[in-house]
Image 1 (cartoon, one colour):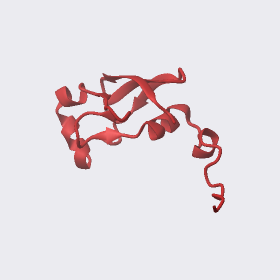
Image 2: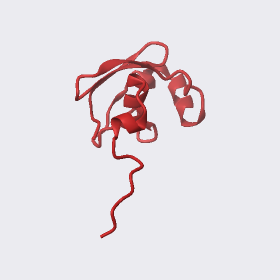
Image 3: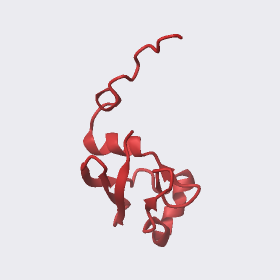
Image 4: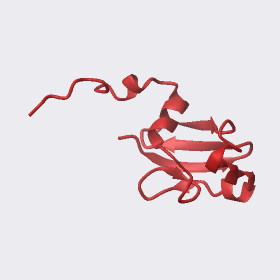
Length: 94
């Protein structure tokens, strides 16, 4: 399971993120800004409140959360199969 160790909001709808495996860097979220629930980021004070939710998601409020797995894939530019090697494999029947 991919877990986030630290997250900080940056200017321009960017976050700096560090994962438990040590991988760290900035992710540009500007493509989400102004769309759907992400319209709330128009309030810069809200965007600046990026934090880790108790269940491990990067969150801004109860309505705005991003999955650590998708953020890891974005940061590393890896495919889901590279990060989750068993993905897509048949599950043995009991």
